[in-house]
Length: 349
Picture (cartoon, rainbow, N blue to C red):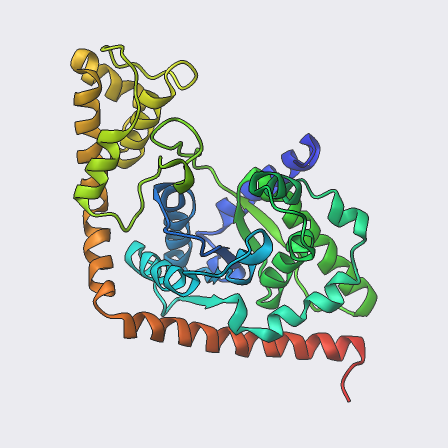
């Protein structure tokens, strides 16, 4: 985790960017992405996808990476990866990502971007890689040994951001060390070889973290997440099976009543209401009334998104075309950046 001073500085800079974005969207190039390890859920939608669409529609140059190579940082198989990638594209499109405005591409299809790893690795020390708190946390969470790819994960992220000259990256506080390392790499490269890369800033999320239905972190492995791709019936079933408690009076108490509060938080973000207000309205209605309210709130909000998604499910050729075009555009950009890098390093023969 970054220290308090660097966090305060990042917050101040993020606020300045947020104020400037509607006025000068053309100044910003945004890169963000996801690992295709399963279906995207409500936490992804409210945490990142919704914000990406807003930036795209504002006129910011946006790129969304499907980080397929990063799947093998802490996993021993790529089983289901193609299916996960195509489903991720469907989720993006259904949620409002417009391939005419936003470049959607995959790691493995853009070799020139990945080739930046070689010069970038020469700009960081082993100690700088070892002390990255996010890498440590991800290794501990996965229970996997520290692979070379996981150790150099932040450098790979720097390649993702800098190959397209990204200068703003939407992140949570826990991702700030990655942005700081990207800034360090860009600065060292520019100082050593000549100005090629921009300074990168974090656009810190102002959306509170949406807990899972049981109050814990939303994760498909916990069975507490509602996927964007679920049907209304599957959503109702997932909510009905969620754990609450024996107290009939509904109150919002994240510490004392995590299950009830997780459901209230989900209803609140889908309706734009305060969780306390919903709790007061349900009152003595108990968990049955609460679950009914949450089910209606989620299904009502996601109905148009799911309708669009169903249309894309019927047209896989279009989904593939979107990805092929995004990969083509990404290769064009990456090859141009790599040519600049070689020129700056005197490696043009």
